[in-house]
Length: 433
Ligand SMILES: *Cc1c(COP(=O)(O)O)cnc(C)c1O
Image (cartoon, rainbow, N blue to C red):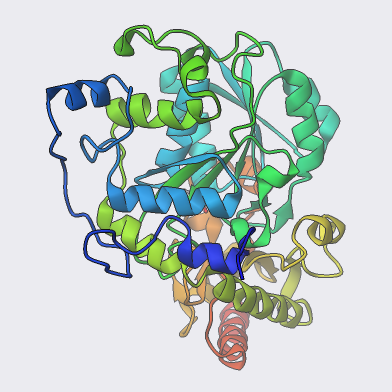
């Protein structure tokens, strides 16, 4: 029997990681190594001129990191991947290839709080400007795109509030404007949705979350679909015009569908430096081996928790795209038929103080700033992850004062429910005092 089109579960175990050709080791070695011996002076020169592929120095790439890159590209259905130090580094790398000073990004108001801060505050130091728009309103997105806009940016399934983006509609807007649609797929993972199949051009990951999956390793990745024509207009000179540092080489002309991935390694990682460590790449490869199994169970647990909370007297509302009551239910059925993710929010009766009391009284659920762990996690975004935002930005991002975010893990479902129930009881008693 031969396999012409391996399934997701096969790829999550095998893509990028054949047995080690030298030792036969079945598990991928951790190449805890910085630099690689050249065959001779000509080989060294060819590598530095990008005339041959190979390893030079681990700031650019490393065999363990390259295995992770290949696996993520296979899972997302992309042409190439650049792994890097964190999800935020992945956003810097993605936009660095697209943007020049004075350029703009049209971004969704529903983004992870740290991304809103990165785009609205820190990117300004590069003279990059983000316009935040309600991505449920295609006319507003279209109207926000101007001559200096270089990307549309959203999350496929948005952190924190279980918001599903209508990627087909957004891809059409980006296509008409001649710019890429950049989609952060951290919350859904390629197991639930592959944004490239719906027209995304670049996919971003914080591999810190569900891909590594056990709360062990920071990491990020940018996946290029390989289908965007960087020479179709003059908007992307980094890719379509000669690069001085490589003797006038033009990435788009020389590397075609690998142009973006080559640029992010050969220029962005080289000069900005946020490379991923081999150890973290290895932990992430290990985590990905069980991605489908974890996501399936975590989605099932999350749906059951969302239903439980929706019926709870202490709970004002639940925002989970898998619920019948969600305004995103139809989009979730279309884009995320295998499950609406494991992270969602709910509103607690009693507002800010009740929210703080509830998270403090969870015993099984860990109160911390992460998602996508095998353990269940809880946080009060308004006093933590979304603290830097204005009250208006908090509400627009789905992180108002009464909002609690959950990331549901793999514990026994009844235990998760019991812990939430007792923590909500504490919050009620504290509010009554
Ligand atoms: C965590 C997160 C990021 C940032 O990733 P880091 O690995 O923490 O830098 C970006 N987007 C989303 C949706 C996230 O959840």
